[in-house]
Image (tube, rainbow, N blue to C red; front, side):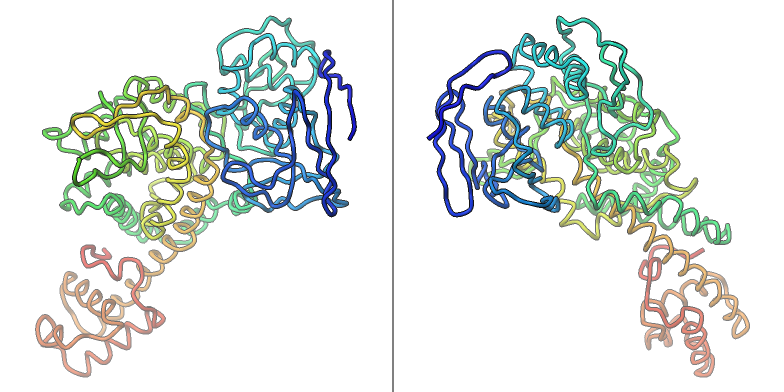
Length: 559
């Protein structure tokens, strides 16, 4: 047993520590004002090994903050490791024993900002329960420190309240976000008062953040936009035009399929036109409503922001009460949240944020807010195209069929959506309405402003890579093979272009063979020798490939 007199930022306190030695673990249990001990389980999560949960996790626990656990927490190992600990665990950053912070507000905040980056959701909740005087004392203790200046800036940025502190001395400015840790603007503006460059991608009304993970770094390093332009650059312009038409239609149709709808061709084409224009218009509330009008029948759906609650889920078949998988933002918060979305779109573009990360934060933020009664999912995917096109990430005139890639990975897509919406549910207090809707009883706006969009950005990068490395080259290759086949077909038989298209489609759908039905109906006049030669030409022109891209789509001519 040891007794400590500890200097806690200017005030002394008595701290009795009971030391327990268990095998090779040194476990210190604090008894008294601070009871902070190593654990193996924190909330619903198991640590990789016994350790102290520090930084944001410690602040969540100490101040009982009503915020969902961040996707990744930091802890300090109770073991005395010699080397650097592995950082591969997606849920835990385990650090070595010498990095254990003091159990004080200042030390935990500095630890959090240093090792975990900026978590706006937790900081925003913390600033509501910790007094301005306490935060000012933390800053005053080290007024030129990197992390204290960040803390100071973030306090005033989030709360709109000015601390009773003089402006920072003229020292080198530091970024609000460490760009090595988190996706940030390439260009930000200097806050002279704090000597901090504001490189946050959003505003206090809406600012999801993305952490740089190894999967994200690898994806960003592939320069997928340049790869797409390489494919386009070596492809004949007419083939590019036809490929673009197919990919656009594919994305439009897939976006409806994700919602479980099979609309008429005209509606699919109309939404395709809206997707093609993404990135060419300024995002605004009116533009979002215009997009909703393209999607829904306003005889049955009220256009514009909801005037009541909203949720995604089912209804109990007996009582009719909601069984929500996700609860949308309150109607009274929609104006602020949508204005924040629009400001984020403008700011992230002007500051040159990573376009895929920006698209993920904006699009998934929109679908979590769910501002409309209907059409949210398709507008959410339209926003992805809007950001990528506006940033010049997708080649001019070409739409990446992201919705088609999402449709192929629909289970993962739903899991990514639920990675935030499900943990959020216990923090939302609600009651059912008489009409089977939900009425939210607590203030929830900040839950939609400051979520961690890392998993969403990783998923979207995978979808974009699919479109660049698979969909685009396969469609180009298919069309080039089609052109080779048709040019050689004309040396065998002369037929109208419509029949050429039909013949090619029948061959593609039947593994390069003309079916008995086709030979006895539309192509009954072909001789056996001609059929044999045509099948050989198809195999040669397609490299004996099976159906790809357009080949399985009976609704679209390659021309």
